[in-house]
Image (tube, rainbow, N blue to C red):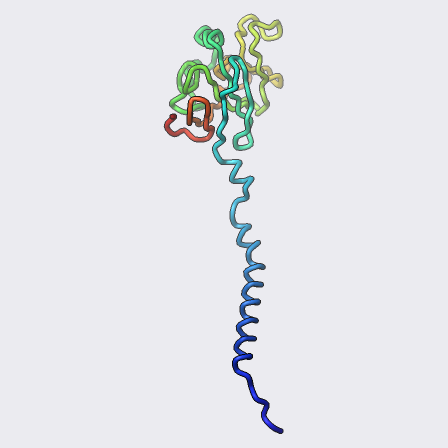
Length: 197
């Protein structure tokens, strides 16, 4: 039997091509496993700061945004609304915001960086219900001491227009003020307590 002539160039080409195709197959099979180790876009977005345009927020108006899966209120308080705040100190459980429910920069009477804009997590500190915004003054169902604020219908907790809790209600602490800053006169970044613009 005669020996077959071996084409070494063809053999090298076939071995190289098979190796490349095998390597591509291994990389394609490994990609989903490697990608599963990184957080999803949704997970990244859930913890990321949220920028809000407040240029169209009218005086007395409240808007809701989502940050970290929680509702956050932005309330553009009017001068009459701000004028009610010092009148309520005697009726509040923590009028000076001694509990750490807000950044230090918001530990003031209006619990905000700028007096007119309240930024607060819209979740009652009692059992996590969502209070309703009741800007009306002294409605019959809330009593004569009511000067506007947030009312939790689940267990009747009441908060003033700065998110401070009334004394004697189930909610133990003021509403949470999230870290935030102004990135411009008309934009607020929720989730970042760096220096405001």
